[in-house]
Length: 356
Image 1 (cartoon, rainbow, N blue to C red):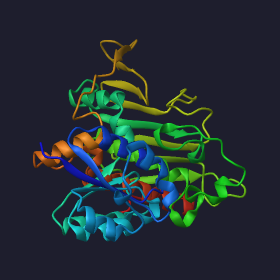
Image 2 (image 1 turned 180 degrees about the horizontal axis):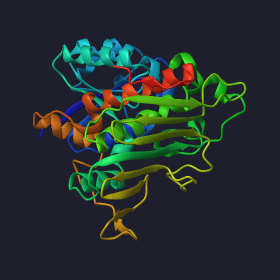
Image 3 (image 1 turned 90 degrees about the horizontal axis):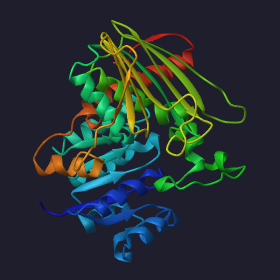
């Protein structure tokens, strides 16, 4: 396997540190450059991965021209995903954009078009895709253990984006931090709905094997003094069945440390059984007609290269394969259609048809 040259550009989202760590730990990948207009945001990455000064940039053009990466990791604010994709795509590199897909469906389509023109791959990473519990749930669905999936119930979030940084290191927000953070700026794609709804709708579409809904109804809270929501509930009607997707900044605890109540994750209902699959938990619960009392099963052990996005994407590229599932534009676009429809429904305060 060749050594893949990877650059990380724009550190708006704290997940850049997590992705760079996966690159650093990969035996056939190298961080050839990092770039952000605010040098201070790169300090931790420079220290963590011992990057020399010549690999640190504040101008993305210089970064691209001097490092010539095979793959670029993008972690900008949600509303700037399309902007940065269109900036980087002409350099002819594969692009991985950290979740969510985009702020709007039009922006997502612009991203797809920009990368398609270069005949490279666009990848949308959803960290929940790599949870062994959810991977196991998908395996059981594909094996027909619960029949046809007709409902997906999703609840997810955390204490809020100001409570942690890369590697899930805890921080304590200052009284003014919300007002300064892009996560709380409407124009930059802030809010719990844009941050977390795509997780549920994209993985939900994966569980439903690409099925699209008919209409969407959503409501968001309106916290005093904030531009964006911290809580949303979306009900989605399919040709058969209803599904519910709920996002929350302000859970009692962060699920990677202590599962809050309600638990973060998925409950999947099929025609012949159900699955409870929660984030970060080592087991799932399967209920069938044979075992109506339910069976608690260990989650599958997931091994390289299928245990994290960097290993998986490089494995796919090495073998000339397109990424699939939630990371593929095909599935992620359906998730974005639902998100766009939910945003419209919440704004109009009524049920709307799926936006095409």
